[in-house]
Figure 1 (cartoon, rainbow, N blue to C red):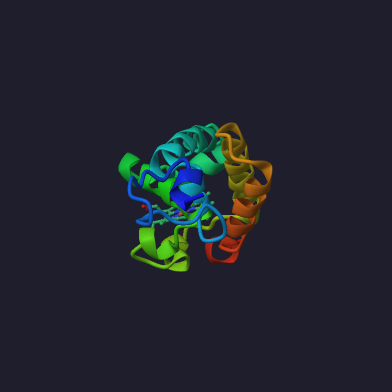
Figure 2: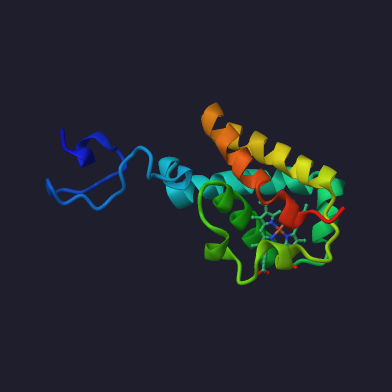
Length: 144
Ligand code: HEM
């Protein structure tokens, strides 16, 4: 069977002309879960969860709503396989320098992301992969 016929999100009408990525291995979780629309839903949910927690909200008091939304999108998209380069003009270390994000705050953000992903229908094994990816950025982001 042609690849596009097995891959429900691939709309290639021309056999042999397959423009999408293979569903396994090379496909990012971002693509697997439907790209922008799915990530948008997860981002909104994650944003609400973050802002309900004073311990996380405090970091964003002087950040514009627009930057705040961009932040949540960067956080979730990066967790799902986009590279820092796609989102930040600065490195993660530069972007978070001087904010004083604690290890405990980072843990809480990861926990809320995990909750939002699960609520958004992301499979448990993929949630684990995503959390592992985010954790690789921990030491560029925390300062205390
Ligand atoms: C994987 C985790 C994270 C990613 C991918 C991420 C991504 C980003 C990006 C792309 C920026 C903007 C960089 C730029 O201006 O060029 C940024 C800034 C910022 N981040 Fe994060 N971040 C993460 C975790 C966190 C956490 C856990 C917190 C706080 C709890 C946090 C708080 C902030 C704040 C306050 C700014 C400055 C926003 C501004 O002034 O515009 N970030 N982050």
